[in-house]
Length: 198
Figure 1 (spheres, rainbow, N blue to C red):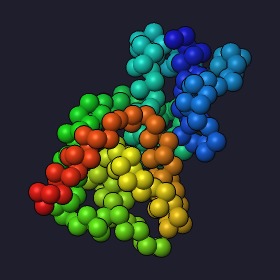
Figure 2 (cartoon, one colour; figure 1 turned 60 degrees about the vertical axis):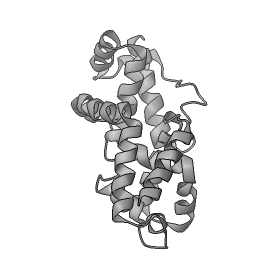
Figure 3 (cartoon, rainbow, N blue to C red; figure 1 turned 90 degrees about the vertical axis):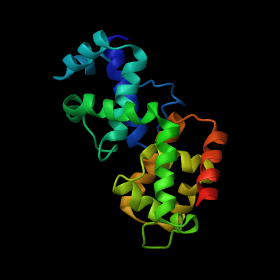
């Protein structure tokens, strides 16, 4: 990947996670950035260095991790990625390399503490238990996405929660979901076994 392609990849992820209308997969990670706009940037050294040191897949995962790990994926800037990107990538890699194990641990903890029927209860003005557990880092963004693959709960929350906090999480979950391309059957099995053991 050339430095300009690396920059375009960054822009594609930025657009995907900050704009409702942009879909990374629909546009195949492409943007209309020009060489002129790239060479005007003071931070182009970052993209030049990254293009030399990382493979194409590593670059994509690096940017994906940065947009997932940051506090607000709609407002993150390249300066934060330059400063925190390695840390974000390490955190994200650890979780995604043990996806099913982490899912099992997190839902076991969740449904030991709360009844299944209560976790997805979404009443106007009140954050559901699932969201609260995610906010306090007891349920990872990956588990939130996997549970949406299984239950499609985000759509229901969107109807019942007119709330800027939820709107931010909702968009991140929906934008991340296509990247968590899983066979849901093993995860349904893990979930069923967890609930049966309770």
